[in-house]
Structure formats: C-alpha cells, structure tokens
Length: 353
Image (tube, rainbow, N blue to C red; front, side, top):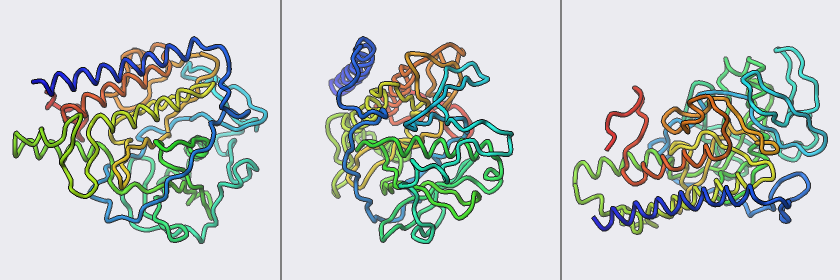
C-alpha cells in the first residue's frame, strides 16, 4: 500500500512538474540564450551504437501508422503553409509546391542536408526487425557499427506525397540532438525507392515490450510486482532494468527538450512503442513522423497519434498545443505503474486495471 501511494505521489509530482515547466516557459518573453540562430540547441555528444544481441524479440512495430506532413527546421528563408485540416502554419521549404507527382522538399539536393548524406555502399542492410503500414526498419551496419535503417515500403515510395512526408521526418530527426532522443546518423539512397534514414540502434527494444514481459511475470507470480517498482528494480543481474521513475524521467527530459525550442516541437505520438531502451536501459524517444513545430504560440487542430494516448482536446478536434504531449506522458506513466498496455492488436485493451 505504501509503495502504491509513493508511486502515485511520484506520478503526480512528475506530471505537475512538466505542466509547471510549460506554464513557466510560456511566460518567458526573452529568447533562450543557449540556442543558436537557426533555433537548434547546443550539440550533445552522440551515444555510441552498441553491437548487442538479436533485437527481434524486443521490438514491436514502431513505424508511424499515419504519414502526415511534418515540421521542417531549415535555417534561412522559410515560408508558412496552412494545412487543409485547419492546422496552424508550419515551416516549409521555400521551393514552390508543384503537382502531386513532384517533390517540393527534396533532401537529396539540399545543401544544408549534404553533410548528413552517407555513402550508399557504406550502409549494409540486414534483416527486417519491424514493419508497419508505411515503412519498415532493418538491422544494418555502417562503418563496423550496428545501426538501424528506416525505409518506406516499395508501394509507398512511389507516392510523392509520402516521399515528401518521409523527407520532412528525416529533416526533423537531423535537427534534434539530445541524449534522450534516438541519434540520427544520416540518410542514404541510390534512388528514391531506397531512400533510408540511418539511426542509432538500441538493443533493449521498446518500452511496450518490456512492460508486457513484466506483466507476464506478475501473472505467474504475484510477488513479481515488487521486483520492478518506482524506486528499485531487481529484474536483471546484467546492468539491471532501470526503476520506473528513472525511465519516466528520461522521457520527461526528452519532452522538455522538444518543448524548449523557441517554436516548440510537439511529438504528437508519445507512447511506449516509441520509447526505446539502450544497452544500459536508458530510455530514448523515437519516431518523429507525426511531429510538428508550433509557430509563435499558434495552436493546431489536426487529430494525430494513436487513439488511447491522444489528449481529449485533440480527439474533440479543438485547438491544442504542446500540452497534448503532457497528456500522452501521463498515460505512459499509468502504463509504467500498472504494466497494462493501452492498445492491443485487436483494438482497445479490455484489461485495464
């Protein structure tokens, strides 16, 4: 009982702290001194990619199931484009939008993306580890390092709208640099059909799979809940799965980073499937295929993300801001506490506590 009360208190403190931070940030009128002119944060050291064991048992499909236009964070001249859904203006390339059969945001010829391009022959694709409705993730190697390679499915790669969306996602990944966000290594292609984003490999898989395994332990042994708590973890003798509070703090740190841009970046699809774990059980956010940049305190109305984690104002089609991510974070906190997953393949879970 004491442990449950302590866990609930910690949840309230973390969520309250995140909300308090957002309110404080909106009250600030001065620009952040530690940001560069193009709106990016100072660089952090990239985490080395760990060559670990087979990942397929730890990964669930974390490819975006909806492919929408994402924010672009190019420096230089930018324009605002209002989406048909009534969303607020987001930054887009100054290149004119052509017909549906042309690329308006081609990273292959963008000078600012040139230093992210990897030689195609240096990236060797391996086996498939995850697949969704729009893309697939493969194991790969790059200069003797284990990495992952994200590609559109062949039929989707023939759709120029989806290619534009994928290129926008690559731009977003290239603009982010934080130890609690999966590191972007670069992109590679020999043609549009095999355009790929190359990302850091995290061998422990996603948080959703970890919670499912813990729930199975608890179903077999009621005392197993005591093995993995908010303030201690005895799950593994090899480094040890972090206690729940540390995983929650990792996620919160990444979320605060995204929201701390002068124009906040909203993830819009925070869920355990999009939280990956490193060799040392460090939690990192991934999958920015639905992310948006909020311009000058304007809000948005598009319905994005996975239903069970979407904030009520988004479901109602009302205007929303980065606080929608805070709601999603609260749902993740509940799942951390109970180990019940909100979504199963057939739909909403009926196993809610």
